[in-house]
Image (cartoon, rainbow, N blue to C red; front, side, top):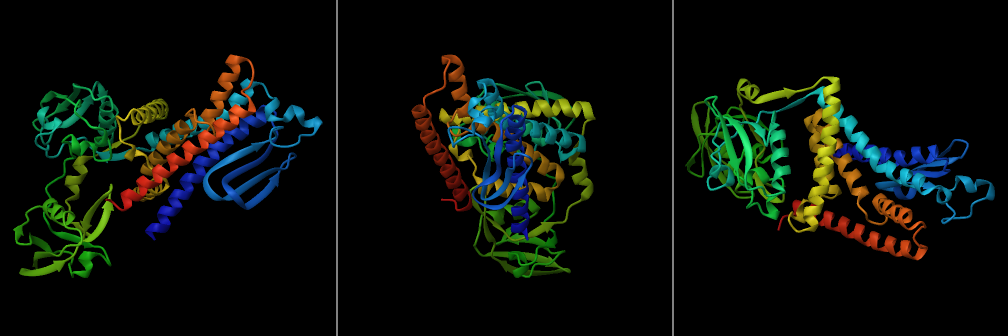
Length: 455
């Protein structure tokens, strides 16, 4: 069921992003008077096709869904009847060709703005930016952060949620600042200023575990190791654990908090653990072997149990952030711009060797995130779609032949030199671009496999 849900979330996301991108090309091409022969979602053999309109444009869903294209009338790709010369793409002024090609990425940015706009109006339920234990001998510890600090501003930018804090810290960290100003309120309500030194951050540190590596973590209320739920067919279920069981010790080591139990289980995937349990006043032993699962490229143990949590304590740590229509629209534009800038910045840092290429994700990881965000609710899924839409827009603007950015580069050269590049030069460019694109895709899939099978 989880696999089918993830697949459905991925297909919806992919379909939406591709349709918007290609519709941008299609719409501007029609406005410029170019005849569109085919609008295809996917590549390869057509699975479904239908011809529509006076031009009998062919609308296609093809077998390989990772992309799409709009095929236009063009004398370089086939014979064009003399009466249709004026509708041929290659005969249009360079300004119109530029607009048609740029319209795809622009459509992705516009989609991101709409999605963020909806997200900010619907509201976001998120964790307050309250710190948990600060790891010793880390940049956060040296800066004087303490458990219970609430982050208020980072370099003057307001922080309302933990996601805000993570985004701002990560966007500044790529520049390795020696002094990052963070305004906080401590556990006693006193305002303070912490100066965070991120100059020692390494290329491999800028990943999903970034905050942990600089010593920061979210605050979690102290939860007793009492089981409230056991997932069917999990390691805990097979071991005979029941709701209401209180875990007293693991392999003879006393356990007083749920977090202690979680750490013991995470550290021993596939290894036998002896749990000392209090059940109905009696103390019994249960052997459990944690299932081995992979998270962020690391094998960890899980036994499929959930704790008994005080809902009032959790409510105190949550905040709902929503904005009125006009404010939400402005914030959506700003968010799209900041995300686009950061994506381009990260790519540049990768090329310079300052950020690890392990951050490049392929279709497997994207599908996983699609499923997880959709399971969390509408708002997280909208945020995921907006982020991927921005990434697709930025990727397509890179000056790599075969991508939209490569064609835009050709048109800029044409404007400067007053004539198009030679067919030979463009053919060589296409070959180089295709090789680069396949190399990037292969690297992304390699990273996906490494995340699934670490080591």
